[in-house]
Image 1 (cartoon, one colour):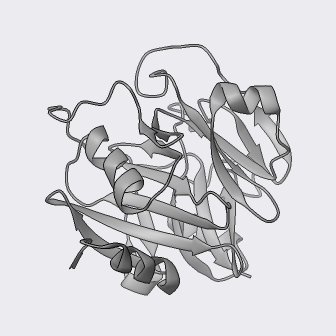
Image 2 (cartoon, helix red, strand yellow; image 1 turned 90 degrees about the horizontal axis):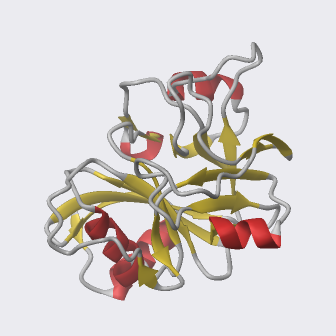
Amino acid sequence: MIRLASLFLVASVAIAGACEQVLHDDRLFTICTADLSRQEVSLHLNGADGMPLGSFTALDQVVEAPIAFAMNGGMYHPDRRPVGLYVEDGVKSKNIVLREGPGNFGLLPNGVFCIQADRADVIESRAFDAASPACDDATQSGPMLVIDGALHPRFLPDSTSFNLRNGVGASDDGRTVHFVISDSLVTFHDMGTLFRDVLGVTNALYLDGSVSRLYAPGIDRHDGGRQMGPILAVTEK
């Protein structure tokens, strides 16, 4: 375990392109960093039979390239259909949801993680809808953790809402993507400040809570548990 006390340590994680456990504000997190100059990010929901993959074991059987790491990729209904916008391999199967609603997804602003051929971005949902970027893969989730360098306005430093959580944020040039999962119970504020103040990310998105899972062969981690909906995979080119 390392303590992120300086930008030097953050840079070392990014350069390594691996998964590292870190300590931020006395909370444990694992940060996995994708370098899009040599890696690809993709979304996966269903197998060849049309049924949700649900697990990292099933994912490993359908993805041909070596998997650097994988993570649950957005909120989903009990039948594992995505709650919001979902695009996989250029095909949109679920439209974007812009209305406020119950739960974390409806805690506006929420956002979209958009993957293109040469970059990946986190974009606030209404801005995404207005711009309509062409994404090879996209998943909508919420709330946003960081919006244009500011924490979500509903986050409280003294919040008592603790949970396991995971999220994603990309560098401004879209070439480096940080996937973060908490290894202890954390608040939204804890997670937002990690992305903003430690990783220097100006836009970051919450992916989910108690269902958060990570598969990282390099650190011998293969989380099990409840069946997942969309799964984000990072593979070597």
